[in-house]
Image (tube, rainbow, N blue to C red; front, side, top):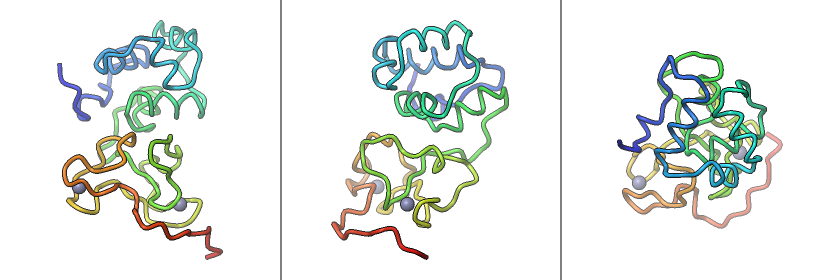
Length: 161
Ligand SMILES: [Zn+2]
Ligand SMILES: [Zn+2]
């Protein structure tokens, strides 16, 4: 079994329970480890994997997506029982995102192109080598070593326009 990003997409017939369990085991995480990484209760993970929870609120959903290293769109799709649309990717705002933290769920929205906080163009690939972002837990591109977020220390306050 591989843990490539492609295999992390839910199958169209997969339930939230099966999907979360599959991605979690592919990552070699216990339910407890997943709960800790996602910032949710162990019982919540158990309920999800037993199929007792079929809808996720925004915060646990973002936490789970981050812990499982998948776009929030994947969890949305599996909750709604629809196939993942092509183009669902890991995206972030190069200005607002703090490397290593959970990216805002709005950035991962498959129709979002600009940051709703500052208007910057969202980024879904490395500016150095154009490889897609592999994980938002990475600070640097594993292919070329360029930081995912602009390295310049310029303080950019939220512009009015
Ligand atoms: Zn922004
Ligand atoms: Zn790169």
